[in-house]
Image (tube, rainbow, N blue to C red; front, side):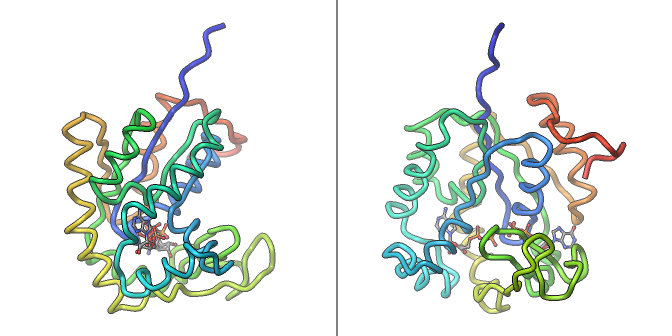
Length: 227
Ligand SMILES: Nc1nc2c(ncn2[C@@H]2O[C@H](COP(=O)(O)OP(=O)(O)O)[C@@H](O)[C@H]2O)c(=O)[nH]1
Ligand SMILES: Nc1ncnc2c1ncn2[C@@H]1O[C@H](COP(=O)(O)OP(=O)(O)O)[C@@H](O)[C@H]1O
């Protein structure tokens, strides 16, 4: 039996474009391992590790964490995933990070969520998260069953400090200046697959169809429309 090669994918898009929301659907349907730089940093901040304390001072300002720290953190986590199909979310965010990643492994595909900035701004102020799992809710789009409570664990939801309007503006500026060149970097390599739109539910079927050409759906097929 020929074993298919493992899939190494990256999901990109501005803050609030739906990377976490789409990643959760990808994991459910295609069983990939998900590594989110934001979730990893928030976990470190909550545990007050050395990286966490340092990261907080950058994140609260809407700035990116320095490349060397971020790259070391993520490449170290990836070592434990080398036997799985994986999806990187939030990394790489600079060309220097993308180059460092290339030295370690060959990326197969980059999913780019192309969502306009105007759409994003109001989404983020209505975002609530369950920090321990990284589960993400939105008061209008995907509210929890009970207000302020995580559906699965019953634990309280919180708002992210960096979702304040003034910090969101700085994060979008950082995206334009530092992360957009990464899209170009992957486009030149022929790896970029962009999905444009203003609603996750309209973009998702296209992402699903695209990934289904590469991986089987491992979820229970109890509905005709994959969610
Ligand atoms: N109104 C609306 N909110 C959405 C949509 N897709 C995702 N969201 C919400 O927008 C916020 C940002 O999404 P998230 O997946 O966290 O984006 P990320 O920052 O790129 O990881 C969350 O509160 C989501 O629940 C959508 O199509 N419409
Ligand atoms: N690859 C990275 N390089 C530098 N900073 C990062 C990286 N990933 C996350 N961060 C920091 O963590 C913050 C939150 O990241 P994340 O949860 O991915 O935000 P969002 O999903 O809203 O884009 C970023 O605004 C940035 O300060």
